[in-house]
Image (cartoon, rainbow, N blue to C red; front, side, top):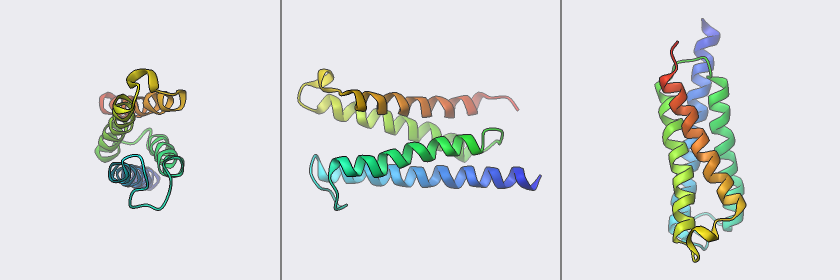
Length: 128
């Protein structure tokens, strides 16, 4: 019983950390608008540090709490996946060249974002 509760807590904390990193990344990207934002790093560094760690943390949150019922983790997976996929898609569409300008790595992030959202939806509809 205690192990189950600790897995739920770890899953929730990991999902919250992922969301904080994602929101920090998105706000910095919005402030910087293609240049350095409030974080002293380039777009590439920001994406590799904040983007990749966010994706990893969302998958860890899902994996750790896979058998646990947690509304917090479920909601954060859905919202985090939507924000990840949609923000990269929107940024790509607004860039010069539109859809044709979406590189393979951006397309990968869009797909992974929507996979995270799907995992959250799967948790929401999963019967226990």
